[in-house]
Image (tube, rainbow, N blue to C red; front, side, top):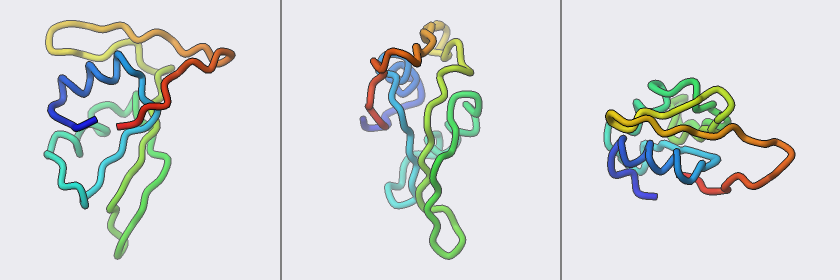
Length: 95
């Protein structure tokens, strides 16, 4: 998915329930994409960091839907159902 805006990303997350989110200095994303993990610490857990000269160049986050009950989509709230760990129907999508 192309990261077109924060509202669109939140909608995509609520609808598709991706497993991973990544940010990279190589891709030169917009500033909001780098702030998104800090803003949603309850939703994103860093799982891998790649560095060059002791500076992160790629960070991969895993979504933790168990700590989040909703995402703010402008003025609307979209409920995110809890993950049923016994049923592996979650999406393998990543952003």
